[in-house]
Length: 194
Ligand code: SF4
Image: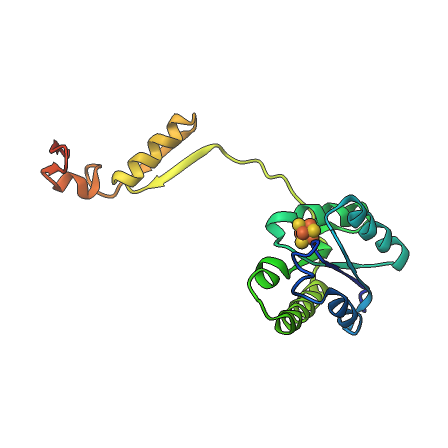
């Protein structure tokens, strides 16, 4: 089934647009299979930018969204939420990083613009394969199993126990302490290792 993809290319003020020709990237995006809408915009994460995504999903009947801007670590949630508010599952939105991985590290405008086009094309192809996902909450058993009673295992077991959780520490040898017990004294305090 053919999907309807919308591509939103962010200028980030001049952070992206001083190096990447965002108008050209948006025009290029329009030529990609599946893309029915593409535009550039000054600040995609601003309220008007998010509103543009929400409005366009409805007006253009978008089924997938691509935002070419910064790293998803910065605004992944912002665009996930904007996509949800537009009526689509948030996982039908993907970001192409044309700032940290492009305009911030490449001085050559022509090459950076070509790379932005590549990143957008790859992200459009990825989003076409995306499926809606549902977030699930799974109950967790607050009990830990630590394998190995050396120094690391003992400390991990103590930390977890001090956090208030039950811990089972498993050691294959007859005693705990691991390699530490084979040492006589430890530098610089010369404490007895055992
Ligand atoms: S979405 Fe990212 S790249 Fe665009 S304006 Fe906001 S911070 Fe800048």
